[in-house]
Length: 279
Length: 300
Image (cartoon, rainbow over all chains, first blue to last red; front, side, top):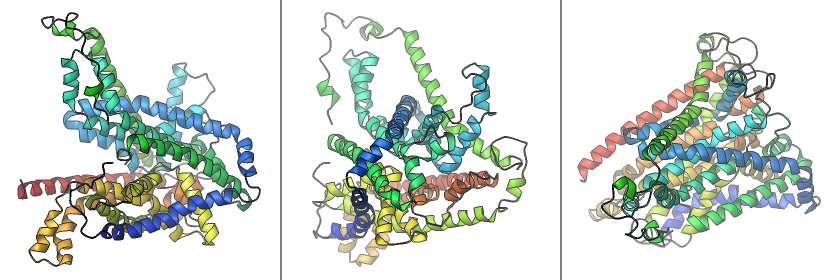
């Protein structure tokens, strides 16, 4: 971020911005920052670091599965989200805003209800299974609910708008004259895409990746509604046990590790690309 | 950010591609049919993605017209208006929806005030802690909900607060502040704040300046942020669930019910929420459109 304000005017009194910030900042410190330290403290209670090693050891499969599901959902969302964002930004024309509205439409349907909707669609007697049976994509007698595929597919669905929107924003900002310039300088269209479009939309790709991957790692709704006990994710462990007091130190260790890992990613991101594109 | 023009390699030597060559050869690349294939497949993927986004929503709406038979609403029986005719058949669902609306109102009011103040500080002033504030504001957006919810839960336990209505409010305000601050900030960036000084110079009292100059300027941003917060609050499940105690919001009620029954009325409520929010969003776009037109006439 440049070291200047966004209007060019100077503060007449130095404390005015701090007074404006005070209520919100106070709330965030007391109920967002301090709680993060509170899980750190709790995670070291009753056994100290052994909470960490214990919880890692007990949940090895779940941790690997969580990152596999979130990673697969993120890659899938990128593979279909980028063309969609590109299509809207470059070919949308007059329908740009309408198409964008379609992208955010799922947000207007309650999260749990739209996930239950996938249960209807992927149900054993439902349309998707029927179609896949008749195309012999799925062996007879094999359903989709309770498979990795169902959970990844629904995760991808629920976070796809978070992938499309930042990519769209970065493509929309792109100066079209650069592409013309690339053409004038004898760059082939693919080369122009690689060197100009793709490179300038990188901040959007990074932002979309973070905004898809991070919430997916903490999700338990998709795994619970569409998976079986073979699709348990980290979030499910926390959801099942958060009421049990004796289990909280281990859960804190689990949450803290997840948070630390993601925090490092975000800080690297903020350092390299700035925070503007995330919001 | 690096400008690609500076990093792009020099064009190929002139001798290889002389200026009088036909344009299509000069630009190299694939034959036209391949390029057309690329364009068609882009369109196909984009339309496929839109269908993918759209189908579950259509299913939610269609299944609100399902005949309520059995405990679950997973299998299509036949078209019926039964659930629409008797939407409040299950009092616990109605109560949950009312609680969700109440929570959303309180959360929206608190977050809009706190978030707008932060946005004003960020846009209008230059101060040392700006970078830190910006990073802290991004964190709630980039934290898995379950971590945020669980850490707040442990903090409430440490404080010995029992979970209920107000812990849900606090939990939801924490992620909403960031959304409000970033939305309002994006909307009011680049405004001419000298209008305020001009009004002061002309003898207006500070309160009058706020009412007549500042507030009308920031109002569209505030409205957009309020709508977003309301929708997010109504929809939030994970953070709310971990901090709700015995309170049952609409999503929590569905979560509790899912093992025993999924009444068609859930789809009726979801469809109603969808229709109302789309209507409000359209209204917002329309008002915003008229305002920009009016403002455009005022200062060309």
